[in-house]
Image (cartoon, rainbow, N blue to C red; front, side, top):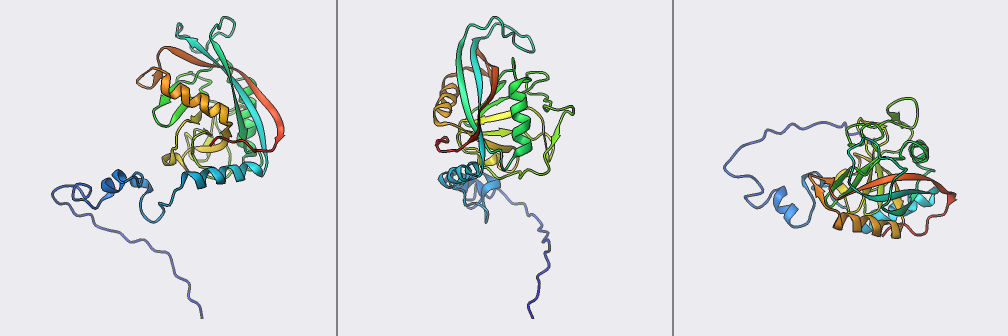
Length: 253
């Protein structure tokens, strides 16, 4: 007869001594310095490979995706208004194209597409997190403090979506998750590998190669003050669906 093992929890008592485990040469800090990731990535579950994660993301998009775009204007900073006026913009305009996994994340994608077509107009990429990417999509305060879904309720409960089907690799777009199982309008464009966000925010698409190159250039050249763009505002002016049934063949590498 085959016996079933009952899961159990082992409580460990932590002892204190002089110096930390990292300082003594066999703790998480030593592993981190050897390139094995942060504390939360080490141990039996640490087997991350950026190339494998990218291949996985592409496979998920192949199940069914749409190509969408967002137009971004790099406008010299001259206003402190909550939402930028679109009538007097004179800065250079750029078009970011994104393949979104509509088959796996139908609710997340539908929310994002509706926001692109209306509520994102005039909002800024409000924060740059170094070696991670750009945050945007605050349709309430334009500062990152709040967000609102495309529907009537502030947050969208996406219970049918898989929370961690895509990994945060360079080029990933992810919805910020302010409350477990819910999203609003805020999003993240990853310029770098960010495995610490896997399972926290909801990655649902990938920038095309050309768009990722542009986002990386912004990351490397844009001046910031405490993470806020200082010299220019990156303002979203319009967006929408480019291809309703796109076959992904050129995601960011």
